[in-house]
Image (cartoon, rainbow, N blue to C red; front, side, top):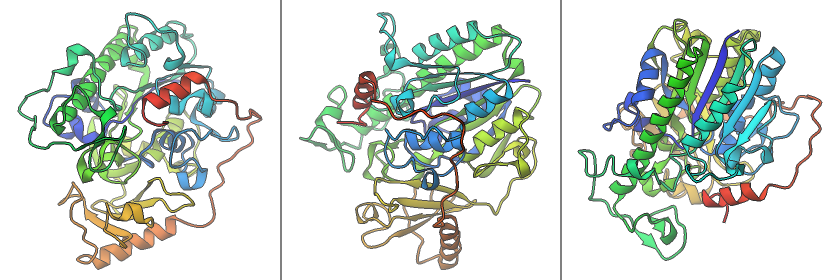
Length: 452
């Protein structure tokens, strides 16, 4: 059996990667990985928040059905069957290094892992900044050193660096300042409050005393470039060990980031625009998959069933839970041009958060909550319809101009948002109960702005 390496980078929007056409050379390593593998151009996160997104990825279920929605800090029930558990039963050794407390063992994301390293709980070392990509690489190297060469492994590495506050290492911070892409014209409004998301930022979010938007975008891009460089060191190390030729490498992100679009600054989760839903997705296996770009929309819900099928686990009709394996697409078989992708977003409660559906071209957002409507379709207008090809920035609501498209997508949305929940809990024999969240996890979540 072949090894499986899952690499995820927090808060990474696809359109800020060179392979997706970005104007800055932010990702030469990932560009090469994409060129040698299968790049899914239109992949969607099912919820633009770390905890809900990974809950959806690893259980292959939608947030509306698994109950892990809105904010971080909701423990995964121990009865959920996770990707690592399935691979463990298949005979894989399972390991992870994660750098975001939102997927900490405190919230049961460690189910099925033989080892689970949480960087924010490590003793700090003078030569490395905590929770950076270098720390993830160091811990990953330790795990690889101890692997049994006779047993296949599953290794998940989650990097945090592009998450706000954007503070790349000093030698990277000026990488994109004043380059040809740099834009100085837009000023960010700063309020007296500590934090703010809409229309500007709070005083504690100001970096280096700067209020020009271009500066923050340049720092975000520098964080991506730094992480990309560290990924290159990781992959080179695995290559020297002779591991890459027998390893499926999967690369993606949990969600993107809003960088001032729609007056939403340096955050994610509140809205369902492409800035936060559109994520990179790459599958790489030398000699196994012919390099190509798949232009049809896909959901991250398909990542786990694809990995399971690759590992030799039989999936009836290529489906596992609510996800469908992408293996046919990896083999070059045509995608479903009439298929739909679904997602959720927002902070509303009682199921009144945003529901979203898209096909190859159009996207419909349903926002039943008034506080979100004013920023999407307008006051007292719960629907917004966009043409993602003509208007990728989602600035023109086509609701009145495209009634047939609206009705078609609305019917699909209502059919998907059914009243009966999908059964996702499976008795695994794990009776672990909720425990008190570690002080280190609370402090890290505060530093990331998740908690006050």
